[in-house]
Amino acid sequence: MERPTLPDAVSTLTGGTLAAIGALSPWIAVLALLPRLLIALAHLMTNGCAAWTTLRSDSTWTRHEDRLLALVDPQVALQHLERVRRDSVQSTVQGRAATADSGNAGPPQESPP
Image (cartoon, rainbow, N blue to C red; front, top):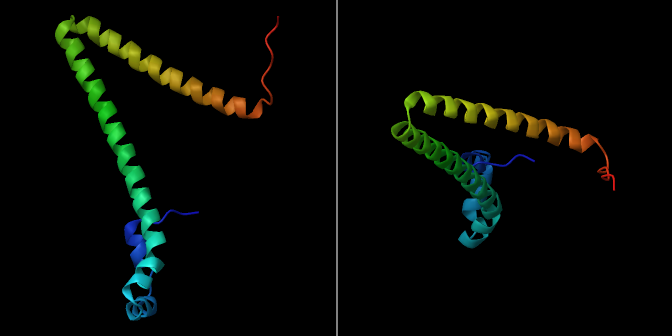
């Protein structure tokens, strides 16, 4: 099911629908439009929270890298940061592969006694 956005919630209404809603009493019109608008609002909030989390994570990494470069020899710091980023990417790729494999593997194997 597609999640509507706020513009989609209003743009899909035709002229006839808008005229019919305009002829209704206000509280009935609100009840007719409320579910679609609430779903769009929830989707907007979810996307906003995801963007905020990504921004904060990137900001934290940048501050950490700047502090490390200021306190340690730049060559050593850059080597460390390169190793950390490389290990992070490898563990993410391995985690995705393990997740994909675990879905098809069946029940978990018991360890030997």
